[in-house]
Length: 193
Picture 1 (cartoon, helix red, strand yellow):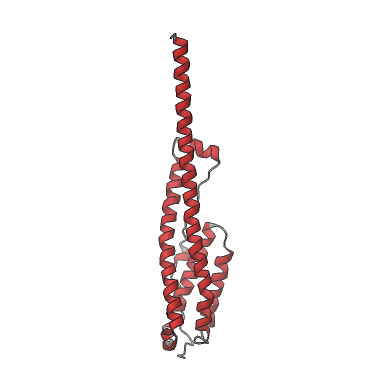
Picture 2 (spheres, helix red, strand yellow):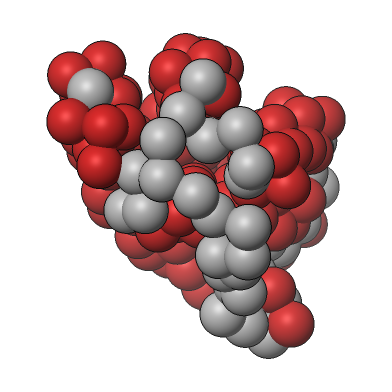
């Protein structure tokens, strides 16, 4: 074998190695992107389940909480805002509003012993509390996946493949400092039914 053949073979194997490595990077980034999408879809499913339970909860408490229309309106408005949110950031803010509105509703419900004894209310309260816990867990998984994805697309050599694939950083599921503030729960005008 002459030196030009050896050089050609070495160059061929080098290009083949680079191509194989690029394919491995590409497949890894596709897998991460799909895991992000799946993690978000899991959150979205739980948010939808919570949205479906809220009208039942509001209907159950309406008769008992006649003097708490503002609380019921806050829950209903938060649900509407959540359903209209489209981006991860908007959904995160809407999610916090709905969670705060539900916490406010449950806090006000403490003033109504008959409501607290209502079996439907208790079942709905437990169901929503369970969904809240599952949503929180899924948020954590989602943010872990997004963090891994964002890290990978920013590192060399993945950044070159990510640029080729037109991959962009993704938003984590988080809320602003203003939206983290404690919700004020007002008990004015509360009478026991």
